[in-house]
Length: 73
Image (cartoon, rainbow, N blue to C red; front, top):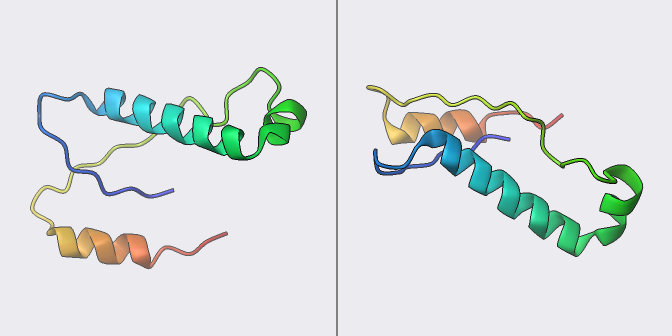
């Protein structure tokens, strides 16, 4: 999953990741409750790890094109 997120420097990237994982897992399990019971009993949906990169001098347009060109496996 690729996300392009902009946040103020006062918010730690790890807090953004935690919130995104928590909200998305809650919504997925709310929509598919049997999934949690049969596949994820007691464990989380997301792995513990994540990767965060900064845009630096790359434009937002280039990042968006990169994300759009990723292939689904």
